[in-house]
Length: 277
Image 1 (cartoon, one colour):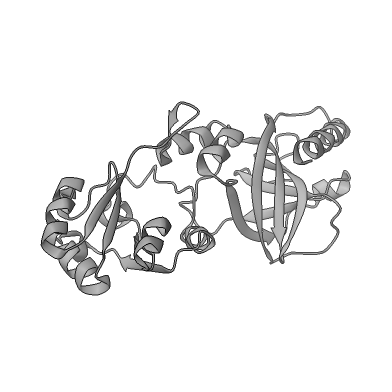
Image 2 (cartoon, rainbow, N blue to C red; image 1 turned 45 degrees about the vertical axis):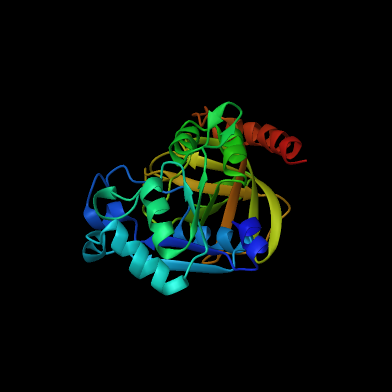
């Protein structure tokens, strides 16, 4: 798109919808998880050097808009496109009637050219959000990152924990993720990078249930996301941090004692440092 814009002396425009149509239409939302939050998606679009981003509010009324009506009213009248770029399997408009072929017809009518992005293969895999979700659900962070083109990350607020990690020599920041639809990767221990206040730190993160900890010490048996930040000793309760996951290291497992857990964490730190170097 940037190349096409440069060729005609134009600007790039990305058009997206919010909230997600499935959330508005109530279709199969129980398993709906997003690789990126809306905030992170906007951040990545900006980082890619896109000139303009249009976020259209998706409502039930808007969902009834015909494909031709959407192109005429929301696209042509609003931004007067010269080149329209669409993914090979993208459909739009009421009942998903809009297609590449329809766009070609409308392009002739409204004087814009249509370009189709064919499916992208990497490592003999067709890149798609479904494939990436499955990789993340299986803990294959390394491959998921290669298909994403960047590191999968989780952003959240640091909340007070039981300080158990601190007591065994590995203090952790416990993360609370505000977006209930954010996809959380598989349970396990990961090498990661931690972004806080404009700086990047090395670390290791655990997603899981902390099975070694006695439940009387950890009454909340839900899934937790915690990170041990290397060479870091600031108090960041209530602050927002981003954990970028680099590689999976091992399954979460129960240890006989906190001493045995501490010994394993020392090995994990060495492993993480090797990965991050």
